[in-house]
Length: 422
Ligand SMILES: Nc1nc2c(ncn2[C@@H]2O[C@H](COP(=O)(O)OP(=O)(O)O)[C@@H](O)[C@H]2O)c(=O)[nH]1
Ligand SMILES: [Mg+2]
Image (cartoon, rainbow, N blue to C red; front, side):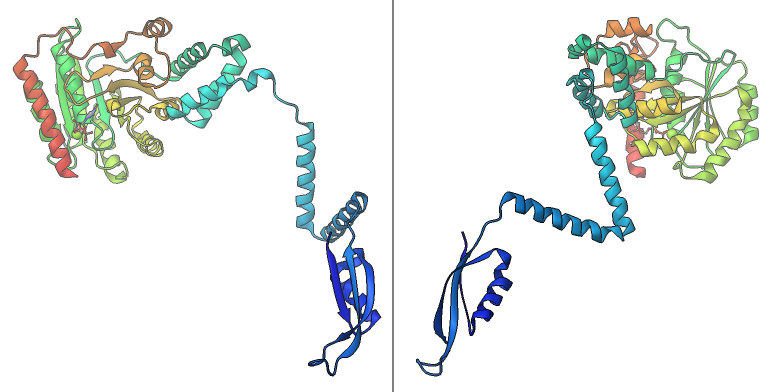
C-alpha cells in the first residue's frame, strides 16, 4: 500500500493538495499542527501536516472505470468517420473470428507442409504449388496422406503431367528448324549438336542430309563458330543476310532432309534487330518450325520477358539449354505450363554432340530434388523412353576419335571467345 505525508499553511489547503496529487482514493489517517519554513527556528509560520494512504480499487470499481474510459473514447470516435470505419472493420473481423470453424482434419495433415517445402525448394511458383495442394486434398484419402513417400511420388507424377512436351512434328521434306533466342544461351552449340546427331545417324536412325544456314545480319564474327562445326561434320553451310538470300537458299536446299538455321541475336531488348531478323526469316515461307532457346539458369522474371519479346516469331517450341547448370527448375516448369509452350529439346552440357536429348517429362522430373524417382514407374505412366541414360552418339561409330577431339576443341574455343567478348 502507498502512504503519504503532506503539509500546507491551512487545513483546507492540505486537503486540496492531497486530492490533486492522489485523487479520490486518498484516505487521511492523522493530522497535526506544525511549524513551516523559517530560518534557524525563526520566522516560521504555523501550518497543518496530514498523513494517509491510497486505498486500492475493488474489481467492480476497476471495471466501472474501464467502462467509463471506453465510453469516453467511443464518444470521441463518433464524430470521426475514419475511426468509425476502422471500428466497424474491427467488429466485423471479431465476428468472422468468432464464427470461424476449424478446418477438416485432412487439411491439417502435416504432409501438406512437407510437400509445400519440397516444392518451394525446387522453386515452383506459388500458384503452381496451390494447385497441387488442392489436388492432394481432393484426390487422396487420409490414409494415403499418412504415407509421405506415396504422396511425393503422386505429386511428382502430377508435375509430370504439367510439363508440356512436344510430341508431334510437322511432316514434309525438308524439315526446316530455326533457332532463335538471346545471345549466349547456346543456340550455335545446339545447332551443331542437332547437325551432328542427324547427319551421323545415331541410335539406329539412318544418316540424314543436313544443311546449316546462319542468319548473319549483324556482321559480327560469330559465324566462324558454326562454320567450323559444319566443316568438321562435313555439312554444307551458308550464311545469308537478307530475305531474298534465304528464300534462294531454301529453294536450293529442297532435296535436303533437315535444314538447321542458326540466328545471331544481340540482346532481346534489341527490338530493331529482332524485327529485321523476323523479316529475313520469312524467306523460309510458312514451312519452318521456330524454336526459342532459353537457358535453364534464366531468372523467372527474365524468362517471362524473353518469351514475350520473341512472341512475334510465333515460336512453336522451347529448347532448354544449360540444364546441367541448375537443379531448380520448378519455376521454369510453372512458366512453361502457364504459357502453354512445349519443350522440344533439352541440352545439358557443352559437349557436341552428346549433351542433347529430345525433351521428355522424365528428364525434367529427374532434375527435381527431394522426390522419390522411380524411373520405371514414370516410363510406364508417361510412355516415354529415358533418353538421359543415353547420349547423342550412343552406339555410333560414325564419329572417329579424331573428329570427336576436334568437336570438343571447337566447343572449348567457343567458350573462350564468348568469355573474351564479355
Ligand atoms: N553448361 C552448358 N553450356 C552450354 C550449353 N550449351 C551451350 N553452352 C555454352 O554456352 C556458351 C554459348 O554458347 P553458344 O552456342 O555460342 O550460344 P549462342 O550465342 O546462343 O549461339 C558456350 O560456351 C557453350 O559451350 C549447355 O547445354 N550447358
Ligand atoms: Mg551463336
